[in-house]
Image (cartoon, rainbow, N blue to C red):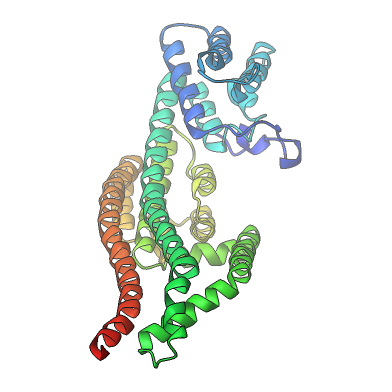
Length: 377
């Protein structure tokens, strides 16, 4: 089992971290799987790391378009890891020197695999977990990005109509000097406001986004936003399910790898993206350190559905808590997939309906004066 002074805890401070190009989760996942495959084939660790380094350095040569010699951002990191291992360091110790690339979860699982002599097995398990987590996160992002893109296009179309198309048409009505229906008057006022204050509207919109982004970077601001995200209609339940799936899969995998419960909770806290839930996990860790069981500690937070802590309690009684956690993760994986499909199929017609109503109002406001003029002729 991993001790409290695990390599992840001895990682260099943020100020001394590698200044490397951003490495994707997919790259790290591939490293874990490829290294496991090489070790299973019987290759010693240092030659296996050298083979990975050669693979990373050859990768840019296969690009169709490239500007000069571009080395894969992981190549330098893996070279330093290989050299450290060759100099006598453990693999987990070498990985912990690059916290920008290898998370405490990755490092601690490698350390557990080295201690138990099952490094290849744990690397495969780690790669599977990272792939599932990435796949689930991508589904949620697509469920959010699609309606946001549709809404942005709808707003853009309406703004274009009100700024450039409507004024040229309504000007004819104004020159007639006749009493206009209220929809037409409302349309003329809205169009004039947007046209006159368009730059101001854009500045206010960008300033608001900037203020929200700046506030999110503060501890209190991010806590407020993350708490609010869980209360959002439609999406709040989705965010909670995603975090539960991410948390339980990580905890289950860590416990199955032989890592102590307190260390597993600390690592899992870093995996959770929602700071409000992460703060709740801190209280769970404190309760467990005082002798409480994890199921009752999870229940006290009031954040998790009853099925979660009941399955955990049953797993503790049966001595297979890690299996129960993995079952919870798989259950919520399916629920997240179902929820994302439902949201996508629900929001698309809603956005189209709202856009149709707005465009319909514009058309109606333009046609009403025309109908009145025809009746008078």
